[in-house]
Amino acid sequence: MSVQEYLDKHMLSRKIEDAVNAAVRAKTPDPVLFISNHMRKAVPSVITKIKARQILDSRGIPTVEVDLYTNKGMFRASVPSGDTTGMYEAVEIRDGDKGIYLGNSVTRVVKIINEKISEALIGMDPTLQSQIDQAMIDLDKTEKKGELGANAILAVSIAACKAGAAEKEVPLYKHIADLSGKTSPTLPVPAFTVISGGKHAGNNLAIQEIMILPTGAGRFEEALQMGSETYHHLKAVITEKYGAHACNVGEDGGFAPNISSFREALDLVQEAITRTGYNERIKIAIDFAATNFCIGTKYDLDIKSPNKSGQNFKSGEDMIEMYKELCSDYPIVSIEDPFDKEEWEHIKYFSGLGLCQVVGDDLLMSNAKRIERAITESTCNALLLKINQVGTLTEVIEVVKLAKDAHWGLVTSHRCGETEDSFLADLSVGLATGQIKAGAPCRGERLAKYNQLLRIEEELGDQAIYAGEDWMQ
Image (cartoon, rainbow, N blue to C red; front, side, top):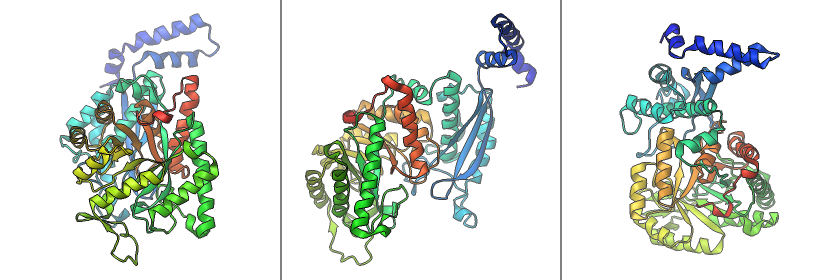
């Protein structure tokens, strides 16, 4: 579109004249500023430029960042990445040249955004999120975003959402709520990582992480305080028992003492909670990530131990008995991926016991077809939402609707490779997921999300609703 065509399409000559007249009537002391503000409101926003670049995530591995420009400003988004990509999730594209960033560079994705996606979206209205997302889906034409890359598509989708919120002059979480049809934003209960293991830490703990949920807090601000205090008490407990060297942290910020017994780890967490005095107001969640220690049909709980005896293999039935005992002995309210990602029957049986929330991560991979199957078969009762497994915000909203219609719990989740982008916080509030998993109450890329939730709660004031005891709703 030429400059003259743009001027004619939006009748800018008339609007400039109206702005000048309005400034005269207002007797404004700063006519230029008045006219500028008047024009910003009078002219509909369109995408004028999209510029992508390669940045590093929290692990020092490349990821993509996008600056999306409209005539209202510039809006930036960056995307996280997991340590593995499941066969059912949207795929991220990397260059694969082992001589550059060990094959993890994303310069091809940057080029795709700067050329293909940019050309398709320039001139579009950023408030029309579904149309922007559909344009990228049509441009890709593959089920798993294999041509453009989920990392490319998601970065642009998020940046467009931020631009849309600015155009509507509403907070980002409110814009997301409007897009989803949800009108009551809710502050989620944070699931703070306090002990890391599995692939996220260099210790001998097979399970991926132990988390605490301050369900008894009255506000998110109090929940963050409770999480932080417990985290620091846990550091003291670990130091007393194993020494200061045991307080190194994993990728998500959880402590990683070199232990292999998760009961020992749970006892450490329980002691820290007791020291805070919060007791029943804090619950425990565990991400077993059992696919990572599943060997055939057995589960090797000593898979990371260098001197393992080979005697700690458990069957699916053994695992169920173990989970029942754990839920009886500790205040566990949520277990994630208790079995291998293809062990549908064991997960279904365990979920049917009603002992706790059973979250599907590797089982579901935020894939609509897998979620629909799990709903039909009553396999689990909660979804771990990882937006980069989906691809566009529109599809994320559709996946969330599936889970909500089934009365599932919803956990908005970070990835092990995170950035400073706080979008997940606004997403969790806008979609009222009730739970957010963003890592430990430390490390900048994790706190970016938690601190943004503080700001949102402050902005909402008396209208702020903290999920609290209704965290699964």
